[in-house]
Image 1 (tube, rainbow over the protein chains, first blue to last red):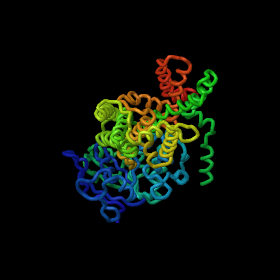
Image 2 (image 1 turned 60 degrees about the vertical axis):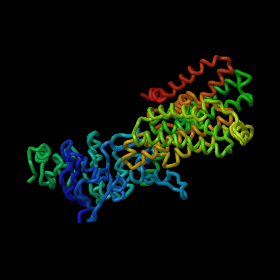
Image 3 (image 1 turned 180 degrees about the horizontal axis):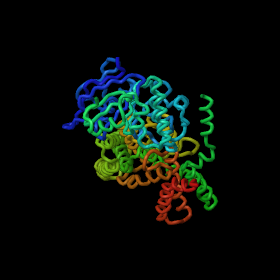
Image 4 (image 1 turned 135 degrees about the vertical axis):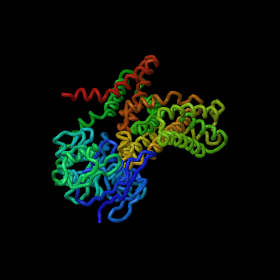
Length: 247
Length: 332
């Protein structure tokens, strides 16, 4: 049984068909590259899985059970996490505060609860150590490098036991050395049995790390194949429409 | 792994001195202390118990409202209606008590009005997404007009059976000759500081000001927090209104006129950043204190009160350029 299964999912915004009849399966421990031109439906697909949008048609199943999500928080409760393209970090807060944002640990009795700083610092430190990042829990995000910021955003997915992580263009705006860091982080997560959807424009990243590549064009899935049996040239052709459908 | 992490924390610790030096509120506190010491020597009248009683009490009305304003400013918002809300709440208190109701009924009606106005501000800002500047500018006009309606634009100075209790509340001195308003202000400042630093609400206030989009996508209830923030701001104006009514012993419809600018000035001088994400309760308190010390010292030194705005204005600009100056110094 697939960890996550999308069955004939469509999403319409008025007359605009952002997604049309897309089916997709995802297994634990695999990295799926999700590619497509701007407006091809990548973000819409990610937002449906992340609980931001409900599909107009079709259904989502997790280990065979249907998922109906109204808000992102519900997706998280099911172990689906998203790392946003802009990382969604607050520069004015510490690394630990960002990791736990929206899910702060508190202690106290009844309605009298205060933030549990020691536990949050310790836990964030453990996660950074696990991600082999130099990031320190108390440092302000404002002072961090691009790679460290990525680590903070990815650390968020580790406080709950995420089983599926969607990464939206994680390597779009960082230096070459930092790209290698991020790809290493993705391998680390994959080796823990987490399913990763890597939304990316960058062909080399997808081909170096993904098991499978899925190509969307104008809201339709036009390819879903092993990376080994494809090539950057073919994927480029599929993205632009030079090749109508993958063989 | 744990050892490495602990080392990291130790390396990350700043020394106390550099931490203090990076805090704007610390420099403002220093300015207040230096000014006070100077005035103690330069005049005979500053360090008298009478004058200190007056100075500490006078700044409380601005300070209490500045605490609420600081929270609003940390979220990246602004509340221009506080002066008018203070007036309306004072007037509601006065009118209700004048009609013969007890002090607690009067205070409940007054603070209830404040919460209702804050709720309206917050709902318009958070749910209809009208800019806070516009919403609270409208409320500035509405609340003052309602105060005139409630009192028929008269001065109220008789507060019914609990008249004396109200005057004691605002004008008395409960502990060691410290004016009551000072005690309320310190208590409220401690409460505000606690809420900002130790509660989830406080964390969300900073998160919204730092990156509202990030707060939304991480599941922070941004709209509810914003509504609460404007309610807190209006409530702080209401509390200040109740205390000020007790001190003045009379309410006119121009009470608190122009106060919003003083309050914003206090918050900004204390280190709150109008772009959002930065601010402290202590900063709001100490910013208000500085403004009052300036006002008081000009009087004592025999300088025309017309100069007050110049000094306050210079401090506002200095405060806003604090980060620039510090970064300039640190630049290699």
